[in-house]
Image (cartoon, rainbow, N blue to C red; front, side):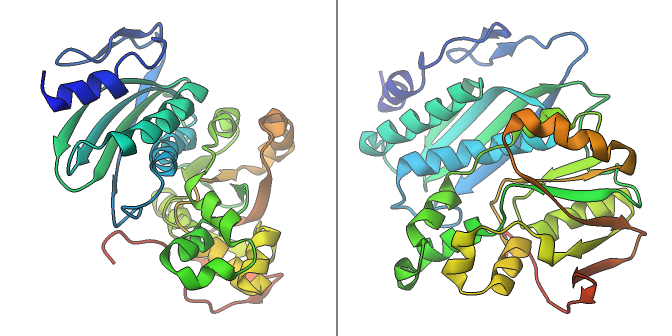
Length: 321
């Protein structure tokens, strides 16, 4: 048996209890799954590359959490229930010292969300991870990007900006002495996919997206698909006290909140008639939500603080810049 198959058998096979809808998992040319009647499969694929999404010497347990959590977040943005994941791993050489903590973290998070590894691949090359997650959702209720309408309120979950500050710490040793540097670095890696929030929003939210490239960039995807504009009050942006202390000013924290990528919080819009139902629907989720603005007519996009216009020039993350 080759080293590749030894690694697969040791670290990836038989690590989880099999879901009832998995007819055949790893060990054959394809996995076989069964989709419950009335539901559709939501599918998302993402790649993380060493040197681009994480440093090569990063803690493999943190890398595993980030890789899987970021993909589950895509399912959350559609209101889908996580079900299955396929995983392709490319690494320069078999490295069990790296794989052991990686797999421990990966399967711990997978089990928490009830998502089963059903297949994948391993190959030799520069370190990279490609995951394809699949979830189940009623196609008539699935959250999309094209449903926002003028007058809808714009909400976000959690706090924003911490991930960008954490990345600052990772990339520059000079940042390590700032207040809360260690906590913010951890938050960069350890996001919490808002699966319960996404499910609670079904039938209430008019559109949704997860914040992976920065609020200001991801919100514009909703605006483009829905043919609308937006007005954002930056004074309402949820920023942590740790972020303000780290940066030294509330204004810079607000700018981080608008531009920070890899947050994996949700941005969603809610029609006025559903505003009263939102807080009660999300009460069991234990997740903070904040209204940060309102949908406006197409072509309008303004950032202001309590009505005072701001001329900030900000952009989110671009994989090719």
